[in-house]
Image (cartoon, rainbow, N blue to C red; front, side, top):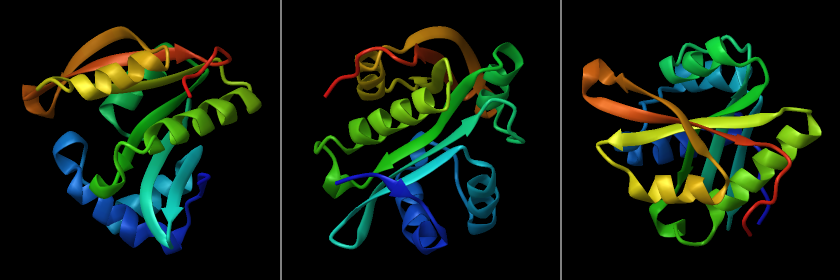
Length: 167
């Protein structure tokens, strides 16, 4: 399987995948998806048997994106790709699809000359699976912030582009 560019034909399954994982990320409406898709630097899907089973949405520095986590990075660095969300369907998990999407993103970042990839994951409530996954890709914590009215805390992470990636 290979990540391919997401398009409007993928929006309904993307929305369904996002809703199934909304406990770990922000809600997404069709209107919001159309907006973020138009401004994304990278929006890819993985299709298996004609079904979208995973997607990744990323923004470049300087994008008109209003996420508080994205803005945290944008105030500090001028050269990055920000992973807004990566979602894998429950039935497709443990098949390496998130790693496939990340390797594709790092390759695109290198090709476009970005110095780093940035992201965040929850630490309160904890998300040890995401922490372990990002550590494998060389991410290190560069800050923390409370979001969602103080109900959540995220670890803000960055990884250099150009290093070895896990298989």
